[in-house]
Length: 273
Image (cartoon, rainbow, N blue to C red; front, side):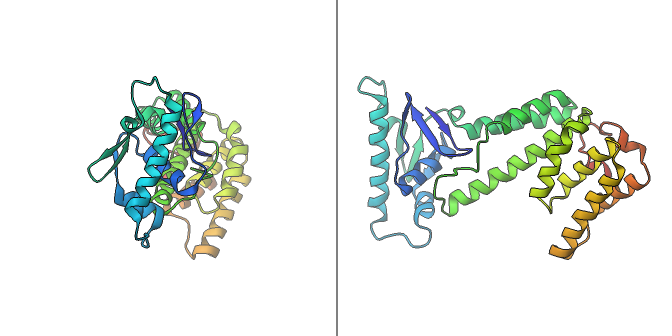
């Protein structure tokens, strides 16, 4: 089976799509796919589909959706398959489990690659870290489950994955900065700071990249812009780390010209103390 969560939802077995057209069965399959190999309680599926107002026939309706998914699985597996649909989408006490290897779902491959990146980043292997983060980020094709209606459970999962994506992106940029790729990062960071006007980490990376590219005035302008957003929208000043980075640029701090300082830190963390 091959399942894609990081963008439009797709799930194929033997080249045949098993994704139903109806919204609620799609939600069931999406949630089971996200938790591949784990039992998902029926109550969790009910919370996802109906929230606090489930229908009176909730158990029967949920079982109907499971039966629909199994029929699609049976059709995709074919009559000569060594397993049947009930082996793949199995019933467990109190819930259901999609019994497939987690590696069949792009989310789990993404998380594996990010973990490799984190370990390499902490060890100071910037080339491996950047490559692992980049491979993880390349699995994204759009917003999580872009074409699936999401209830309260999937919304939490979607937010979790979006945050993880941004963390991986920040760390990949940090690794690239430590490798001296500041010039190549300028255009990317310009777009990211526009899309995330209150994100101090991305703005700090843009400031460092611009400074290393010989554009001190532009780096200071990035600080003025993010400070303006923070003050106007939230009524707060930039964090102490960002203020210290701003001062370091004004002072032409020599630490800004080296790759990273301590190998386990990011550029932003360098000014945390």
